[in-house]
Length: 155
Ligand SMILES: [Zn+2]
Image (tube, rainbow, N blue to C red; front, top):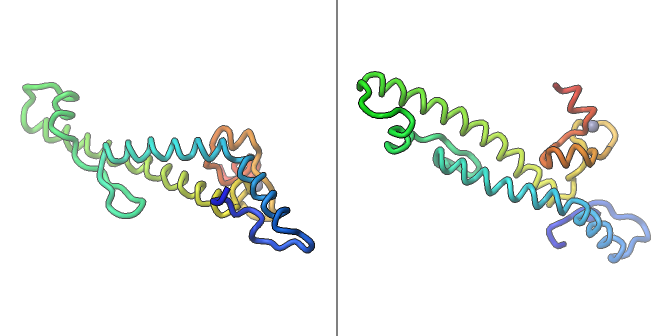
């Protein structure tokens, strides 16, 4: 339970360490399932990101060109060199787009994980009065940063 900080931020008058410990233990248990799913997704994303490209800095990847064996598989053999070149460029563009989408999702996932560690996970980030994100919303997307109402307004 060490990683969860919920309850540490605010000192409530009369609270003992046991009270505070119980608050963040409860917070951890409540989101344990989401955390497990986020960690799992993070691992899958990292694998995919590394398959399509290389890590250029901390949390950013860039697509690399497909290996010769990948190209052969997709394009078949005996192609004119020129069209092969064009296909390779197209494939690289596809890889780049896919890598970017994966990278965006990766950032959402690690942001959610850091919010879990910081104790702000599960609260809507859209502002206003502090309110929780619906459980169904988190079940559908454990990296969600806004409640259903705010999600609909943004889209
Ligand atoms: Zn909201």
